[in-house]
Amino acid sequence: MVIALDGPAASGKGTLARLISTHYGFAHLDTGTLYRGVAWIVLSENADPAEVKVAADAARNFEIEKLANADIRTKEVGAAASVVAANPEVRAALLDFQRRFAKSPPNNTAGAVLDGRDIGTVVCPDATVKFFVTASPETRAHRRWLELVEGRSELEEAEIYKDLLERDARDAARDDAPMAAAADAELLDTTHLSIDAAFAAARRVIDGIVRHCG
Ligand SMILES: Nc1ncnc2c1ncn2[C@@H]1O[C@H](COP(=O)(O)OP(=O)(O)O)[C@@H](O)[C@H]1O
Ligand SMILES: Nc1ccn([C@@H]2O[C@H](COP(=O)(O)OP(=O)(O)O)[C@@H](O)[C@H]2O)c(=O)n1
Image: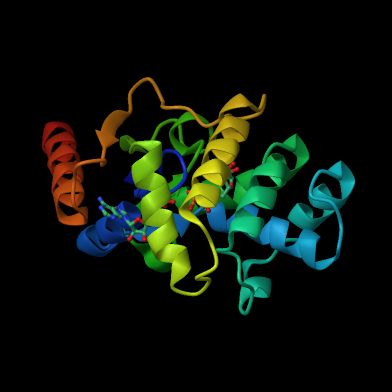
């Protein structure tokens, strides 16, 4: 069983994916880590994320273990991730790993949960359950600000808001696997939902589909 969660930055898809994976005992892959990882490697080589060949080489040689001590959650790495993610060669290099994870999750778990931007549309179009998780831009910026200020108190919320909108626009406008809700995705707007309430809503959808199928 595969559960796909897509949606814009800081909408809560990763939080939901982690809770779902723990609750159902499924393996979880945060696919944003792959794009952030490639971006981090490019930036650490002092190269430009927009350089097609450099980013493609980094993606082809990518190993998740290389990120052990990398700080990939920063705003700068997020912005560079959305630049390398628009490169079709980068996307092609990372596709196989994601599909293999979904098909044969590690530790033989009964299912896999993947979150990203194109899981329900491109990576796993046959996923059992698909969510498109959203929240208002103001809510998302506030959540990301709360998350980032812990380590980097100089960041302004307005700066984060601008960055999220730029990243969303780039992710939605690219030609290859743009961020989009699959036609059969459940829309989950978390703007006015606590984490617990969003998780309960997701569980109702999953349990309903599983009951219907099984
Ligand atoms: N429903 C919610 N209400 C309040 N905060 C939330 C909610 N969902 C997620 N968060 C918080 O918002 C931040 C971004 O969530 P995250 O799951 O990382 O988003 P995404 O994976 O979509 O980028 C995290 O600090 C998380 O704890
Ligand atoms: N399946 C995916 C996952 C991430 N990405 C890219 O990677 C960037 C970082 O993804 P992320 O999921 O870590 O970002 P957040 O939502 O956590 O801020 C996104 O802005 C996208 O450009 C993608 O293109 N496709």
